[in-house]
Image (cartoon, protein in one colour):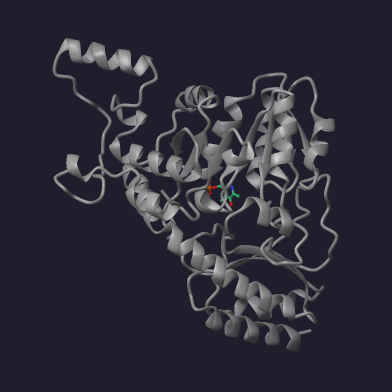
Length: 392
Ligand SMILES: *Cc1c(COP(=O)(O)O)cnc(C)c1O
């Protein structure tokens, strides 16, 4: 079956639910057992690692519905749901690390993931080496005897640098390392991490899976080999996501394909227009643009692009930047992305980076292109850049 069909059919069982199309929202902590035998059998199944309804924290059919959808589309063997994307990232890292271990972390990683390495990981005596996202097979030279995890995120946060994931997973596996990928940018639809050799793939479901800027949720999918460690640690961390949020995430998945294809199309139209504003814009970072340094890798390994990309402005005074941003009518300013609406956010790629400093002085702006008509978005931006030019 094709992905579009899987998004409609996966994780649904109307026959066991009065014919109702969508899964029920189970609010549960206690699960009752009618007899001693039933309790014993349930405990045996649980100890054997079988997925089931044992206690609210272990999930309900609502949770299983989302897990199954993400697995079927992203390609993992099993999936776990978390209360946020960051919870999924930290659980995935903790699953494969112990005191004395070493992590290879991409330098362009999502900020809070870097902070995990700089704080909590250090506290449990796990060391980190940050590496250049474009390192490719050269990662082999950085793998130490105690390296257990190689972490990738493509394209990376803020500057959207692509990574040669198959080359990295090959080198990592040759030395027995587990590869964890943050696959949020592409969503489960536009990148298939397990086909590229990744062992665990994390989604900030908060972004495109939910798609409406109203839920925090995360997922981690794993190969059959990586699953037991991921599951044991995640359960010990006590993660559980609320049933209403899980329900909204599985509902968001149903329309993932139509939304993603529109974000891709709209994003490229706006990115191409921005690239033409050469008097005020230094560069546009978007791997689906043909002249982007990561374009060939994107074309080889990805099935589409999301609506998130970056630009760097030519240096301008703060008052000109404010004139551009404060007057925008259709672009909100704030954290997160992946909803139906467009966003713009000033960012500093150099905050935290240690091996790949960003060379430009001008302000970086991250754009999320929503589902509005791109002509309206461009008109809004055009007026904004005219305000910026007037304030220079
Ligand atoms: C937002 C984001 C996360 C974290 O997700 P939350 O649900 O906000 O915790 C992780 N990775 C990337 C790339 C993100 O953009």
